[in-house]
Length: 430
View 1 (tube, one colour):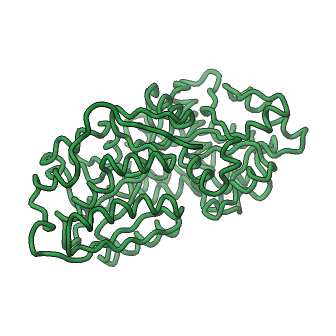
View 2: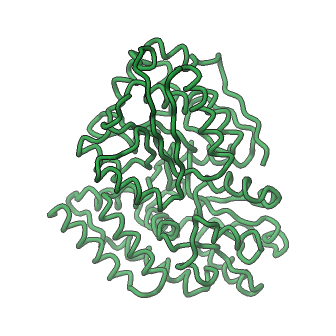
């Protein structure tokens, strides 16, 4: 998946030029070390991040960036422990949403609004909606640093063509594809759900297609009439279990580990035909298995007949990972300059070379896969953040637990909905 991309219009101001606007510590005699944590472990992706850090160090003599990279779920645990011990890194990555809001409420995250207001030429490059997940009470607490990532069904085009299968547009059509693949002894979906969040994508999409985004928002915000026992959530659980009973997943799915490639290996070997995953998977596949990357295609999650949700809605985020500064950072001004180097025009271009799209305006993308993603996002009436990131951490865990139990057929949809509603009421008293 080779990518060629250019940015329209005149070249925007470089970070070096913007640095003169800010009272950066990097422009004084105050120098030191800035620690940075993220959850990027692919060598090529890490090199893109390191390039921004190297350029920062070159522009700010005396500063050194010590970067650490962790696997997805190990990172979540490590970051939580670090904040709890008041030993957070200077720069850290999150998905925004509920977990970040918890740190903000405890005054552990730097408000970036004053910094962004000081460099409007830099700030205005981003799509306004990309700040939604990191905005709290009107202020911005993070910059979108990774790709525009939405959930799509990735599929093996060769397998589909060999078996005369057309990408399904509706849930009924998808279930027919499942039956057709089963007849050929091919697992329809690869799923590695040991860490629970990959499987939750099915539930979130089904709930959105059935009830629309308003159903979730009313339940999550505890608005009058909102409930996690809404019929839309129960129907989503029922349809998810219908998929399980139809043999929709390769065996052992609830025990496979996504972080070590449990689902992707099933795709590479031809034992599974599809995977529902964020579009970051394009870059991961291209890095791990370039030959297989030429065989994949993708299609939107199917519509549900009679559902209230617009089939153009997507689940995901504009920016995927967001960079924030911890309040304990001793070099906050220099840290923001580092954030600019990690999200400037050079970083945007290098991210494109790594099959990723930062959510900046007027980006022209030649690669058909990534341009297709941007077309999906551009026409989407709603971009629903992943439930486990939108919800407060404790409730997000209940969501992941109940979804894994639904996939394991160890709980009924009604029981799962009741657990979610009870947890929401216990947390908010409403």
